[in-house]
Amino acid sequence: MRAYAENKKLFLLAVRVISSLTPGPLPTGDSLSLMSPARRLNDLRQDEFDRLLAWLDSDRERAGQLYEKIRWRLIAILASRGCAQAEELADETIDRVSHRVADIQATYVGDRAIYFLGVMNNVHHEYLKRPQPPRLVERDDHVETTERIHQCLDNCLSKLAPHARELIEQYYAESKRVKINLRKLIARQFGIKSSTLRLRALRIRAKLQECIQQCMDVSEARHRGPQSGSPAGMGGKGGQIRNEQ
Amino acid sequence: MIDKQNNSAKYSDETIRSFLLGQLAADDQTFFEQRLFTDDDFESRVRLAELALTDDYARDRLSRQERDHFHKTYSVTTERMQIIGVSQALHGRFRSRNNARISLTQRLRTAFDVSQPAWRYAFAALILLLVFATVWRGIKEPRIVQQIIPKPVAPKPTATPAPQQANHPNTASSPNHVEEYPALPPHTAVAISVSLDAQSTADKPTVVHVPQSENSMVRFALQIAKGEATSYQAELLTMKGESIFRVGSLAPTNDSKINFDVPTDALRAGDYQIKLSRKMSGWPESMTYYVRVQ
Image 1: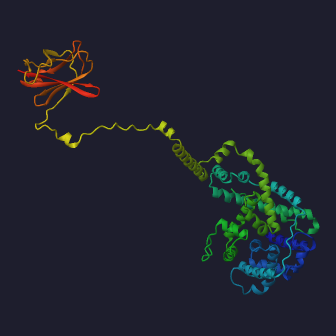
Image 2 (image 1 turned 120 degrees about the horizontal axis):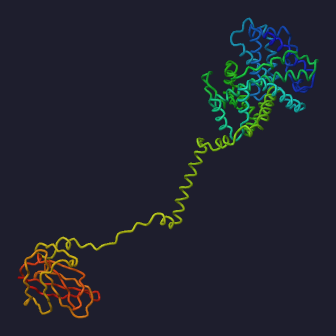
Image 3 (image 1 turned 90 degrees about the vertical axis):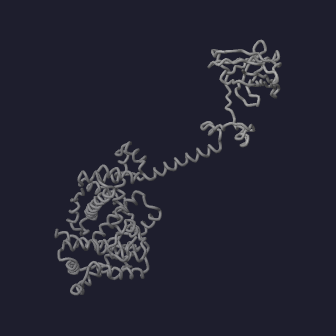
């Protein structure tokens, strides 16, 4: 599992390089010029990233997981605040924290995740003062992406346990009109409450999402070719789904 | 919805959805963000709520306002777009199997589940509607009601005697019990038959010797004018006018007589008068015969 943090680090760096070199969705050329200095750096050094992970947790695996959580939380909050560039600002926040870890790690007391929240507030304030670029919607590879999602969905569904697959299949088969009633019937069939059914189905759905996400990463890496620098082992995790029963 | 004093307060699914759609108030947003950053379990809930939200979006279950907020606030990152893509793929994949997998019985049971509040209200409304319709119909068409419920027949009004007349008769003596007997059956033995005509007067009554035997009758053959064919009422009275015995609906015989049978028990020694009454042209007409019992 140690490879996870290493791979994640390489992956993040690779994505940043790709973002700056290719006209991909994140960021576009216009929006890149409007990025804060921290975002434009794109030169997060290996030692800074290592220091960040070490500051988050001494165990690199747990540190990687915490890093993921913090990034997700930052994006969720920024998006909820109506920020159209939630991902960019989240990365900018992480960059700033990474640069400061060397200065604060000896004296900082308290929940380290909260520190990110404080930095994010500053980043967001700065963002609000800047002129807002028009929001660009990436639609170029929509059909291709949809096809890949369907392929990955097939792949991930086949890895589910029969019981979990049946549950998710029935849960998503319900029609719009008889949604609630049918959920009751399905719950009765599985011998559980409706609320439990919903929770169980959503957990399986979360596992599916994770599996599909990793499958898509592998697929995208193949699609971009070897020059993308995407680590070969990243998609490996997509092969395992811990089934919800 | 949110307990601001207690950071460990429970947030409803609706609140979490509001956060994801950027619809929380500023104060609530601050507390929510702090909670999200410090509570791993809460973060898991928000992640699941996120999936539920994208599922609802893919199935077109969001309101118009929610859809607008979803486009503006939620679908802003590539990762989230991918989540939406998975929701749409799941929805598209299993939607077509819906019809095949769910049996007709299940669908009917689901559609007509009487335990559902909506159906309960519908039935209640239907019953109320039927009641109101019935009442309205009954008001508009009273004949229908009369056919179903017959009109109660009121008893015929009867003339009630004035209290004084009813309770205080004019006679000074105590009232005798007067019974109106029907015509006596033919097997009753008639001990004696007496013919009476207009010649018997109060001064010169017809004398009758009544035998003292039980269950015997004295027949008074009252002479009437010929050709009278109507019903008569005969009444035995004392000379003071006290009624002793009375028989109605007496028919005349062929020889123009009215047979008035009186039980021997009712006769004591003394003078009596027999009043024979009939109705002519709506007015009572009577004849009186006088008898002396010895």
